[in-house]
Length: 114
Image (tube, rainbow, N blue to C red; front, side, top):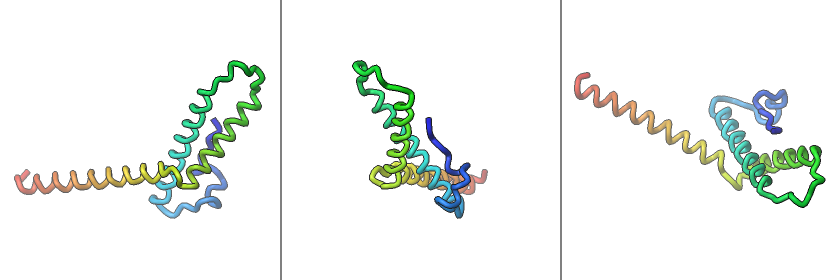
């Protein structure tokens, strides 16, 4: 797979400067969305019947992977499929639920004297 982690890249600071945990989290969700879309495109490409074609070379497969990688990146950047935003929203909701559970647990413990 051609996936490149932008956080480990030397060009990461010039592409998207990271200012804090929120920015890192957002970028991680975007990369996870990109990976999901890349895998989706690869699986879709795998459903194409190529039994009549025997001329698929390694170069063509590599080009198809590069194309899928570029397409998945463009789809994430366009925002048409808000996968990263949905994951981030679910993450925030999970944090809120966790915080409420902790607060309610400490409130109950305070009321019962435990």
